[in-house]
Length: 90
Image 1: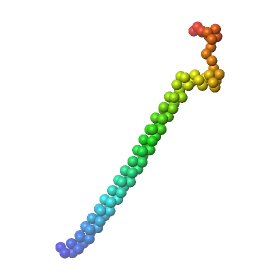
Image 2: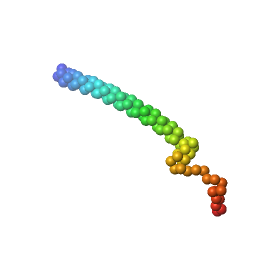
Image 3: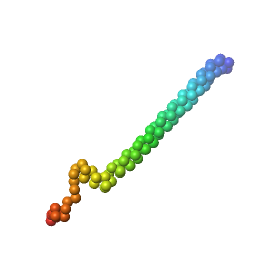
């Protein structure tokens, strides 16, 4: 039994050491992945804010008053007089 104990004790110590290294490595991986998750969530939040700002800008640029102003100034469009309007029958 003494010979078996001489072999088993170092093997058990080696297994305990490998187990400790595994715990440290897995904890490090978990922390690294958590930091990456936090960075990705911050990026997502920033993109959501930018998306909201772009939607507000789009709604501001597409108001009826803005479209009418652009039609008058850039395209020189005017509302036709009633005499210039013609109805087409189907």
